[in-house]
Length: 61
Image 1: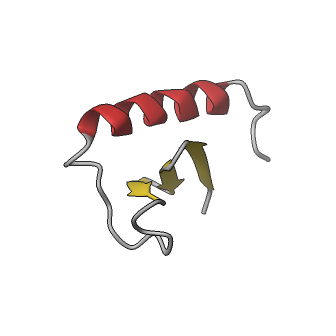
Image 2: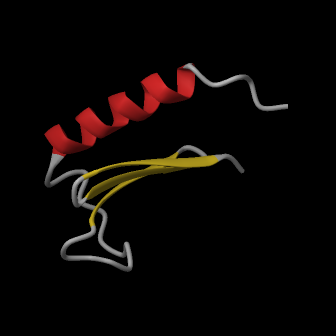
Image 3: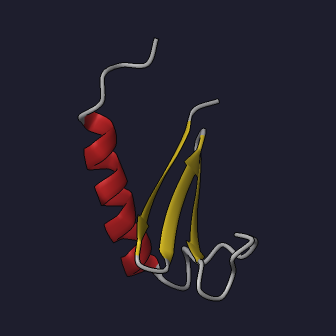
């Protein structure tokens, strides 16, 4: 299963397969509380950054 992540300050976007998560590492260092609904703008911003980075990678074989 492919996975990846991007971080900005205390925020971390994580993608594992088709699942996506947003964590605030300042308050949740164990990455247990998904905040994507409560912080949709941050989620969308980090997801866009991840997607841009992912599109620039060589295909995974």
